[in-house]
Structures are given as structure tokens and as C-alpha cells.
Image 1 (spheres, each protein chain N blue to C red):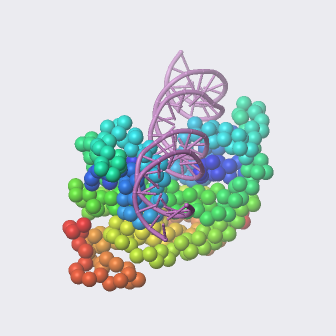
Image 2 (cartoon, each protein chain N blue to C red):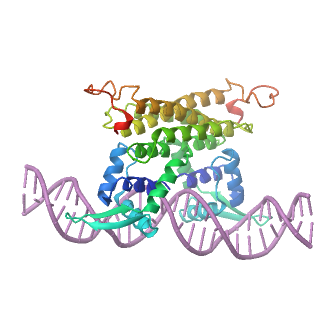
Image 3 (tube, helix red, strand yellow):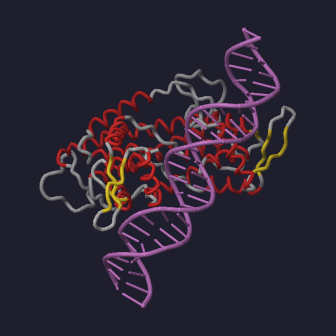
Length: 181
Length: 181
DNA sequence: ACAGCCATGTAACTTGTTACATGATTTT
DNA sequence: AAAATCATGTAACAAGTTACATGGCTGT
């Protein structure tokens, strides 16, 4: 749902050919989210089919350039205006499923994930542009949040924190311990 | 990439039929990540084709039950062991693209997204199980992180913070302002 | 000459989404 | 009796991945 509109948004800033579109996208996002070239051409086909872009010309270098249409610009404006839903956190699902699996060790999962996050953390390469900085920092903020959440999970699983929320009815008896789940 | 293995992980805890698999998945994840029934059946077909699950029996109620195979269990174990990559943050991409779009107002985008996050925040429903609590808290932590990142973006765009990292070469002249980008 | 990148695709496949068809059972 | 839910699917499509074919141009 988003590559289509991402590419269209780039087209909104001027005509492009396929290879250039991909380069532009990767430059702006700083290379996180690598884009397959083949998919760029497939997406351009669909954009043209749907009347959001047109094959404008083959320029002097033989490049097949695409331009955005007014309808395309409108779609981009809509997309930008609408808020974005949070993505699905695969690790959270994984942990939720692992907790009830007899063979799986939730604490080991947490430790592995924490190690992976710590290793990926030091993105030393300087950002060349404000866009790249924003995208990179988004990853950093998200990674830090997941690290905090991992701590939180460990505490919950170990029973160090009470299980329920304050808004919930108080639980009777001992707090739930991981080994009982 | 994960529905297949999520369902397989549930099968690893006992045989299930399609509808039940979906209910189980949604119960554990607390309903965030709604799952289409049709896809469950499509996934079961593929799991059987790939030798990771087998149509074990049609029980007394006429339900078509599936069981996991040893190879299926091994796949689940592998999946759980491997760390999970962070997902792509659509809003970050959107903002990065909007910054250079003449028609788009980055500050307005940020404001809209912040409002959407604040509105979605108070998930008052009590979690029925530890799994549900973990998944829900993951969303909460991620949302809080995005809110902090939004503040950070506003500051960066307004030029209130210096643009470069400390590790980068110092920039000459005035800090970059949003209107110049 | 040869290696490597630029550039445009095609093909095969997997995954995910939406919508619909069909019939049984349960609830109101 | 009607409506809702349970249950098993099918169809069509969008989106993502990998691999390959082809040709031009560039640098060594």
C-alpha cells in the first residue's frame, strides 16, 4: 500500500524514470527499506493503468520517463493528509505465542532480541540530509522503545510487577508467575 | 512473512481447524492484527503442501483438523530462535517525502499524526491474559516512542537543534531551516 | 577485451487483503 | 421465522522477493 504512493510522491516532485525513482527513494530514506528494481517497473505499470501517472517521454538518453497526473497529485495529497497506522510488531506476536509453547523459553527469546537490537543500534554513518536523519532517528527511537518494552516484559513475566492494570479488577491470590503459564 | 509461522506455532500446541486457528490467534494477540479467515485456509493449504502440517482428521463435529509435523515443529523452533527485524515505519517515509514536496506541510503532517496517536492511545479494555498484555503494551510503547520522535522531528525541522550529529563534520554557516528544504 | 554498473524489463512465486458463495448451527 | 454466527472455502488482486535476460556505457 505504500510503495505505490511513495513512488507517486516522488513523481509529484518531477518526472523520473524507473531506475532514478528507486535511487531517489533510497537516497531519501537513507537506504533502510531497500527497494527491488523490478517492483518499481511493476508499480509504474499499475500507476499508469490507474491513470495516476503517464509515460511522458523517452528522453535523449533513452530513459523512459513518467509524469504524475492531476489525479495522481490528488492521491498523494490524500495519502499525506491521512495519519499512518502503526505497523505490526512481529516480535511481540512471537513472544505472545512463545509464552504458552512448552518447548520455548520466553526469557531466552527476550535476551536474543535484546542482543540483536543492541548490535544494530550504533548507526555511525552520518545522515546526508534532513530526510535521512528523520528516518534513521525513527528507527533509533523505535529500537529504544522496544528495549524498554523488553525490560517491561521480563518484569511482567517474572511476576515482579502485578499483572493487572489499575483499571482492572484486583486479582485474588498470588501474582501470576511465568512458570505457571 | 509471519502469518504462516504464527499459525504453525499455534498448531504446535495442538491440532486445530481453520476457524479455531484464527480465533486462537486473535485471542492471543488481543485482536490487534485482525486475521482474514480466507487466508487461514490458504495458509493451511501451503503448510500441508510443504509438509509442515497434515490434515489429521475430520472430527465428530465435521471440523477439518490439522496437526503439525516434526518438520513443522522444527520450523517453529527456528523462527522463535531468530531475532525479529524491525518493521518499516510508514509515517517516517511519508514525512521524509513530504519535506521536499512544495505543496505539503511537514508540520501539519506531524500534528495530524500526533493527534491520531493520542486518540488511539487510551486502550481501556483490560487484557485477559499475559500474552494480550504484552502485545498491547508493545503498541503503547511504540506509540509513545513515535510521539517522542515527532517532537524530535519538529525540533529538527524548526532548526532548534543543530542539524548534524556530533560525529559529523561541523556545518558552516546558519543551521538549515525548514523553509529552505 | 573484460568487468562492472546503468537501465528496462519478464517470470515465477509468496504473502496479504477484500469480497463473495455456501451451508450448518445457534440465537433471538 | 429471521438474524447472527460458525465453518470451509474460492476468486481477484496488490504487494513483495528472487532470479534472470538483454543491451548500453564506463573504466581499467
